[in-house]
Every structure is written in C-alpha cells, then in structure tokens.
Amino acid sequence: MVEMDVTYEGDLHCSAKHGPSGNVLTTDAPKDNQGRGEAFSPTDLVGAAMGTCMLTVMGIFAQRHNIDLSGATAHVGKEMVVAPVRRIGKLTIAIHVPKPVAPEHRQPLEKAALTCPVYSSLHPDVQKSVTFTYA
Image (cartoon, rainbow, N blue to C red; front, side, top):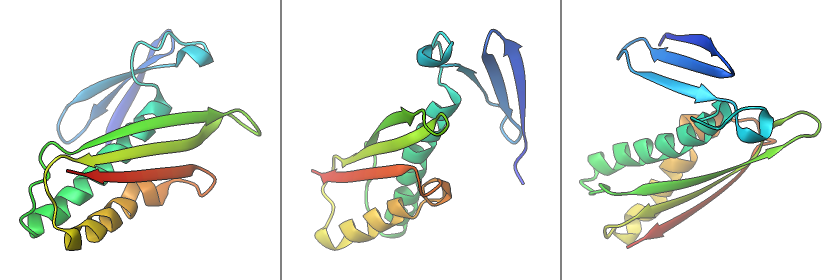
C-alpha cells in the first residue's frame, strides 16, 4: 500500500504529499468550476496519470527488448461532461515515439499502453481515444 496525505489549504487549493518520496503536488479547482486554474485540477491529474502510466508501461516493455523510448511523449486532452453528474467524459491521448521502432515491436508497445493500470481502472463510461505515431 502507498500512502498519501492530502490537505485542504483553503480557497479550493489542496496539497498532496507522496508518502514514500515526500514529493508534494498542489491542485486548484478549474476555472470552469469556481477555481482559478492555478495548478492541476484533480481531474487533470487523472489525465496526467493516464499519459504517464501509458509511457511507463511502454518503457517497461522497451527496457526488456532494448528499445530506446527516450523522448517519447503523450499529449492528453481531457473533456468534462456535466450530465448526469460532472465527471471526465473523454480522454484523448496522442503518443509519439521520436525514435525508430521495429514494426514487430509496435503492436506489443501499444498493447502495453492500452492495458496500463490507469487505463484499466477508469470507468467504462469514460471514452478513451488513443493514437500512436512513430519516427
């Protein structure tokens, strides 16, 4: 189990401390929901978690197969819906690998990304659109 401590700082800002590392991140409510948008919103963190999770599991596969994924990026777009409740409606992820990858490794890399724990943990009502491009 990983433990985190979250504190409401006031004015719709929170801080979250990661137990194992001590790293701290902050959040703010988004501008479209009474905040100032001065930091990631909690739902922004879900999108960031999706992108980082996908690249991380791709990296695990890449290490096992001596593939250089350094410089790979994930651009994440998050769309909210308001009915029946305010929630994430869609995450659009564009993954780009800037270095050559052998064709036989592309499908396993993509499968790794599409089975990352964050992707697999999201409710089925959250639409997920993922594209991959390679050098």
